[in-house]
Image (cartoon, rainbow, N blue to C red):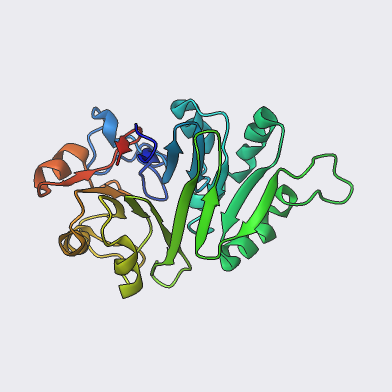
Length: 261
């Protein structure tokens, strides 16, 4: 990996219930294919020794253990839904490893929602012996996170998550839009020129808050990245079956997939 190259690890690529869902429901996914076992959506962006996490899924502890990551130099949020945010308290162990608070970044709407639900992470509650663990920062379009491997810059842009507030991110040659139902022109402009686009593709059929396969492939044909990686995959998208159906340059994500551009 060169100084300009970023490494992105897919920590989780499953839909909000994961695969399998509680109760052992694999849907159309073959349980004997390990790439069908999916944790909730999150990515790790790295430049040498600098680590940036996008979203704190409910599976974050397991995800960071699998990635062998103990330190984070910044955490970004796409939005505040449970499958993106509810692992936030597990950042406490990262703080203990680093012996300092972690800087987290979200736009104003998302930060207000995080603070309402997890305010104790940002300021010590009265009478509590548990210290705050996070420094909250508002995203003003652009975020720069510095660490021992150098700076990672992220540019945020609004996306349409079926009426829910959400943003996508551009990191150098990568674009990340895990929760999106429709692409505003502003979002197309933001992902234009990306060599790798990690993009929402929930299922085969339309859904009110997520993109489906036919729509996502139309977007990819317009943007024409070198590689498109489908994420937020529901239980009806079997890894091997979907792989056979996709055009060249488009692949399904799987947990642990490492990309470098």
